[in-house]
Image (cartoon, rainbow, N blue to C red; front, top):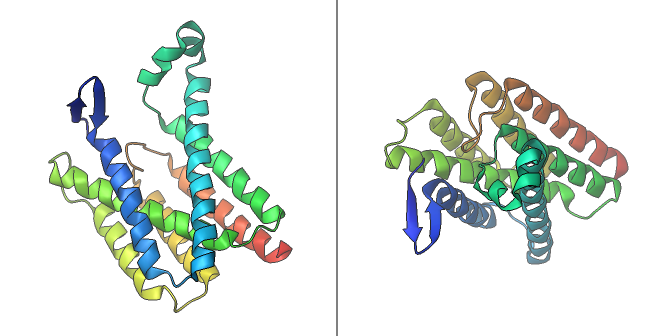
Length: 213
């Protein structure tokens, strides 16, 4: 998805716009499918916002690390470099450490926040893939079909099984299928080991949460 809009001196890529719209629709999806009291919903949204912010910041940190020579010579030039899979790994690692810190501190509603974050991500991924099909960048693929089926399953299961179980369904369904189908994540192409590690770390988060809560 390489096309972009020119608004004065600003260049807005369709890919970025699709991700932003997807995140917005993801929050709407969660708001109307998860049965959370208003006070819990507000705290959960704050936590998810912190997760998104941390993830983006450390993706930038990762980009600087892997283009450090360029950053030293011309710090502004680093803005022109797109984030790659290695920067994505750095952001994911930072997000996991943040979650484990919250679990260790026995933060309220961390599991609900993890579930909301994951569902927002899945909706955003679906919107991104759908936009690629609409713009002619890609044909209808097994990835978009799988994401649609997984979101339908989560919608039907919401409120019928525990938050723990729903999170595991979402995480393992996505990561195992991602490993089998070699799915891309937006414009990133993670290695199959990434999906395996995410599955293991997700299980560790659940088990640790049960232990300390």
